[in-house]
Length: 153
Image 1: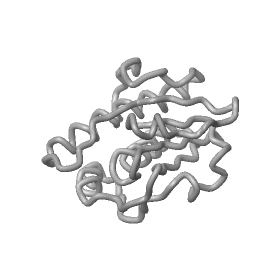
Image 2: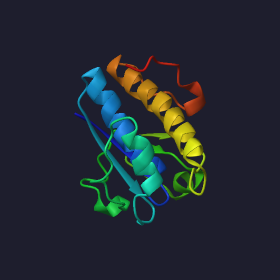
Image 3: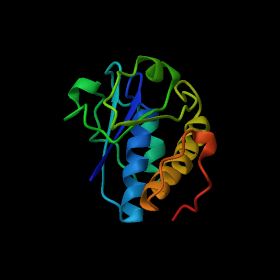
Image 4: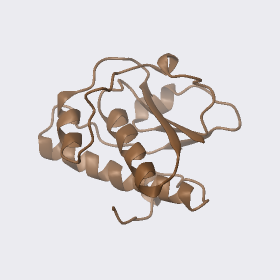
């Protein structure tokens, strides 16, 4: 089973949403993926993230903010994806078998729920394309901008 780690600074919003969206995309594609998220610092999962994900039927209530050191086997991921520039800069070195990707998204913190929804929807398209590529036996798109549009089931 392939392993995916999604990193952000606080593991409170973007990485939490991306984790849930990637798991959901893998479930819909019938593809087994072991998906985790972490931050360079741990805080708490933001209520607005929980709210907008619940609108898609994805429950973040059991999610907790964690650091890389809280993730099991943190050095054995097939893909490490950073979703903010700060995490990309602070991301540790991984063994040669790990593929790193940087899919940056605007921080919705402090914005309206519409801003949160926009980031969620951008992430959904991106991580649907990511899973779609893996399920098709292709490599993950090198950037979010290179993610082809994939129909959402």
